[in-house]
Length: 119
View 1 (cartoon, rainbow, N blue to C red):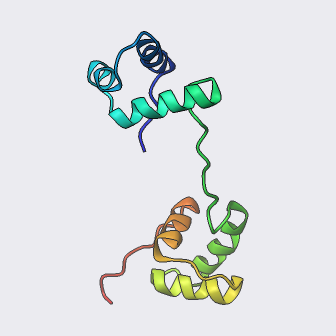
View 2 (tube, one colour):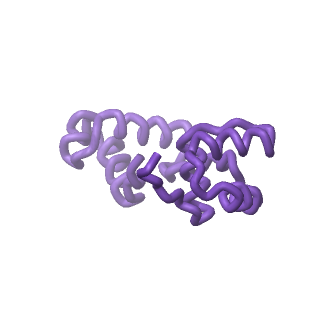
C-alpha cells in the first residue's frame, strides 16, 4: 500500500464536491481514482473529517524477545536449512511458523543463513 494522499489534496477534493463538482470530474481533475473520491466524501460526511486512519501493523510471530532463542538454534546448527530451523523452532517453542516467517526472523536476528552449495 502506498503513502496516504496529502491533507491538502483531500481538502481540495471536499471543497470541489461542496462547490457542486461531480465525483468523476473531481477524480479526473486531481488525478485520483473515483473510489478514492467516494471514500473521502463518505468519510467527511460520516466522520466530519478527512484525516487518514492509522494502519495497524501485525506483530511478528517470532518476537524480538524470542530472537535470542532463534540465535541459539542457529548457532547450534549453522548449516541447517530453513526447513530444519522451522522444525527446530517447533520442537523448542511449540509453535510452527512458515518459511517466510523464519527467513524474516533470521534477517531481524542478523543471522542470514549461509548457503551450502555442496548439498
